[in-house]
Length: 237
Image (cartoon, rainbow, N blue to C red; front, side, top):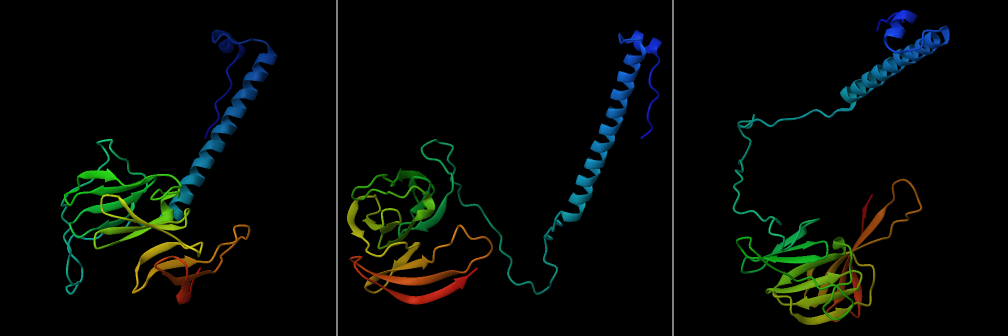
């Protein structure tokens, strides 16, 4: 970048600036700092552009037709219906764990919500009741909830409450099962005479770097009083 010649005292006067030598020195000093600053900004911008060119991921666009002649079957997705929270009756924050009962009703867990929808996606009700009492859910984090549906009954595992809430499809409490074993992660479903859970070992949050996490499949008796390992030590990192 070419630097410009500082203006003369006469030219400075026309701009309303001081004519004396001190004023000229102040102007030159400010002009020099401005040129240096512009150069620094340009250099910083160049570094950003250069780095983004190096670390940017390549965008891969799949062709409309598979390149291989033996690509196998092609799935064409077609929207059947859409569920949105625009009505204000509920809200989506972190929806997960979508399941369906025998009538096609849909259930979704979200933050402080256990939502039920009809088979065509119409909102029906929120089965989530927060609290510590029978049939109430103590877990604050939605990731601490898991469930399965059996014969249109719902078995919801409340991790913070360390219990299984057995309810019907309308959310009416049938039974509450307190568990003796603690720190279970997720309920999968029923066994012959027990409930099947996933349990993970705890992570040392004060330790940096990768840690091994031991995962076990646990069978818990239907009354919650006893448990046993079904498959022990599946290790992930």
